[in-house]
Length: 224
Image 1: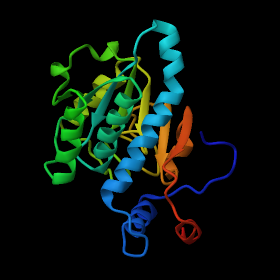
Image 2 (image 1 turned 90 degrees about the vertical axis):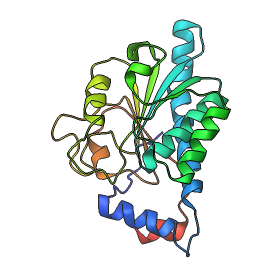
Image 3 (image 1 turned 90 degrees about the horizontal axis):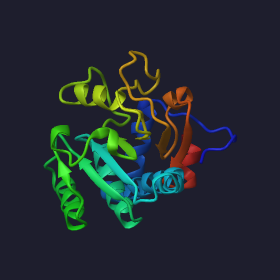
Image 4 (image 1 turned 60 degrees about the horizontal axis):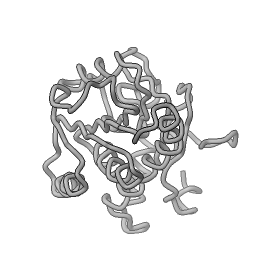
């Protein structure tokens, strides 16, 4: 969890530059490596925040809905669902706009091999939204630019309408990366898991804040 030590907050532009450096020839990460590290970090933070709380309250296996967008943030969500399954949770993935690129198809295949249901609309969920113990918001990342387009506009409304605690991946979906929830259309997560480094909007987050994925070499840390 993020402590009191001062950390740098990244703008949208710098966030993209950091990703480009990490996946460039100088550092050498691949996108699937970064997704695996990010998704595992999200799963660990989610487990540490909620496992004891949920199991003490209901004496049952925690259930989690992972809502995935079509971009890399959604890939992080698919990875987190698999790790939460390995932690003993019952995940369901809501993936309304599947990315058909091979890396995302493979992540979906892995979820299916771990018996994780993947549905494309809220109406197809095996239970009501309000019945989940936790929701992981992996819809929009730092590259998000408004407006919020269908079907995610209505999905955000539905998620805002329930009292289930939300864990947002890197950016609370619907927020401006630097100005926060300026249009009051974004999610209000209980937990934020920043990836690589916190973004400027994280200063407006009021709940628990984790930095996930210890993946930045010192030279990149010094550069940015």
